[in-house]
Image 1 (cartoon, rainbow, N blue to C red):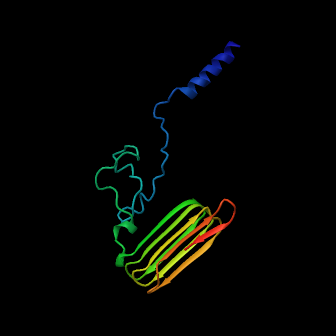
Image 2 (tube, helix red, strand yellow):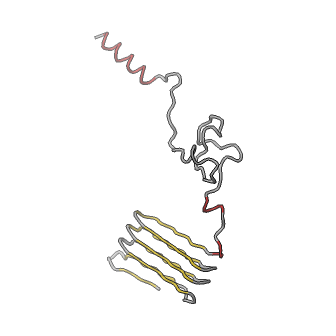
Image 3 (cartoon, rainbow, N blue to C red):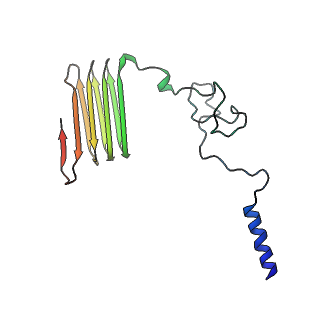
Length: 165
């Protein structure tokens, strides 16, 4: 009996007491560290060598992170496209050909919706909101000179579909 208690106690001591040199890996995965360095690629987590061996989540020393490629060069023509997605499995594609176009797409509490916006012209405006929808496919095509598009599509509590333009 005493031998069994000693074995259990030693086993628990091994599990509970920290061992020298033991460490846990961080919760974040380092991306694009070796092969992409020097190629103008954003590094979301600073590599350990740049932080002097400090954990990757600590603040990096100056000049170790670069902006993402899509943020480094401003969009030409003054076009603006924004997307807000709160839900799951939604797909949004926005293409703007021309100058001064503005497009906003919002999907709130949506599931498996597909939205496409094509603006082919200058100074076109579109605002599209899908609320509580599931499996809808919506396309907005605006040729040059077309009127602004403002559409709200919502699934009502009684199951009806509200389309407000």
